[in-house]
Amino acid sequence: MKHTKVKELLNSAQTLQEVYVKGWVRTFRNNQFIALNDGSTINNIQCVVDFENTPAETLKRITTGAAVALKGSLTESKGAGQKYEIQVTSLEILGDSDPEKFPMQPKKHTLEFLRANAHLRVRTNAFGAIMRVRSVLSFAVHQYFQEKGFVYVNTPVITGADAEGAGEMFQVTSLPLDNLPRTEEGHIDYKKDFFGKHTNLTVSGQLEGETFAMALGQIYTFGPTFRAENSNTSRHLAEFWMIEPEVAFNDLDDNMDLAEDFIQYVIKYTMDKCADDLKFLEGRLLEEEKSKPQAERSEMTLLEKLNFVLENNFKRVSYTEAIDILKNSTPNKKKKFQYIIEEWGADLQSEHERFLVEKHFKCPVILYDYPANIKAFYMRLNEDGKTVRAMDILFPGIGEIVGGSQREERYDVLVEKMKTLGIDEEELWWYLDTRRFGTAVHSGFGLGFERLVLFVTGMTNIRDVIPFPRTPGNAEF
Image 1 (cartoon, rainbow, N blue to C red):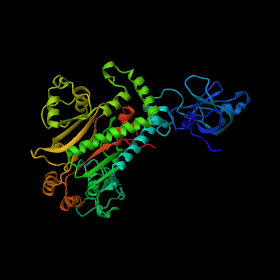
Image 2 (spheres, rainbow, N blue to C red; image 1 turned 45 degrees about the vertical axis):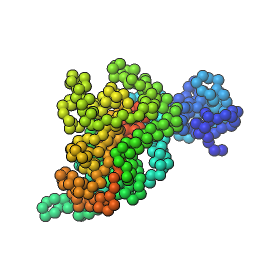
Image 3 (spheres, one colour; image 1 turned 60 degrees about the horizontal axis):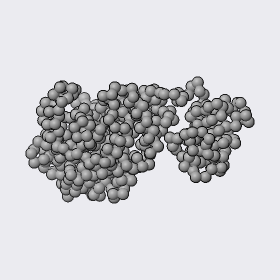
Image 4 (cartoon, one colour; image 1 turned 60 degrees about the vertical axis):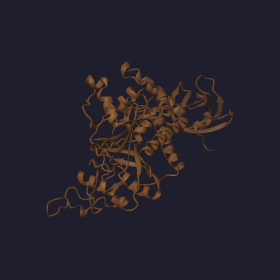
């Protein structure tokens, strides 16, 4: 007999049918009531054991975390809070779980404790919900772009190019670290390395994505990216997933339209598909906020925040206008910001971005036309010669969630910018070819997937929305 998923049983319209279920015990009360979960839903199904006719040895083995297989009839529940329960006729223990040693006992655990047990934390309600939401969001990303006729491109994980020009990359080598080959000048001889050159893990698939957009029209990448940035914060990971669409013939306005439409689509799709999980996560967040001072509590519940993004057009504001607003803001004048805004050209921090979204405009914000000297080399220079056609989307509780731009399509201007920044033209000869042969206006953006999951789940630490977080000093599991 094939076993049925708990989600299917809870949505069933037919009772008194014989059912077969497999799952893990969440709790076992009064030697009689098993709360069983199989990961298909946040909801458990209650299974009622005939303890008088069940061997005491078997009852002892029904512990939190144990894997069990049950047969019985699906009946309407007599207890409150659940529609159906299973009257168990036979029970088999598939895998024992020693209650003295199993860390995920039914009690409140700190997020730090759960991170230290990342291989088991997905058995809790919160992490089961987060990972189901992550899965649905991931599917929504593909569905959106596929429906719009985008081509999915797998860009390389190992690369010789630094797309961001920040230099914070993980090096890839097969050279013996205890006996590195050297050139006559004493430098490491990368010609003897596996790829015959200096290579790294990618920080972005954008440059390669651009080459495909200039042939296929509209493409997207969705894959792992890596930053060797020593940022031990709640917003940074060393390994994370990036969504990067790139569209030929799109200017910055088209790019903003695409990003806004995309974000609203994937959030709505996930709200429709994950109602139970999001309701649970909203309750979790409300509970967590009770311990915070009133001033630090969110003005909106999780679902209100998600609807806020769906129901409000994103406000488009130039960097110059944003700097004026920030310079004249109360927290800036009273020196409440950690980074005081004194003049045009400042690189905005998360506190400034959140002020604009949460306090000033009270809606998602798209900032555009940033100073050229704080943005990457590939962004299109404006006619003023000092700003570039860049855009960032700012969200409540997160700050920047999307970074994008219209790309510099003019060969001469791009080469000049690369020279100024000391970027090797020979290294990026292939990238420059797209400007030599059939160049055209094109644009794209990058969205850190984990930041999107963070926003949709209401979690506050990015380490809690990826299965196994990679951070400075931590590559456990």
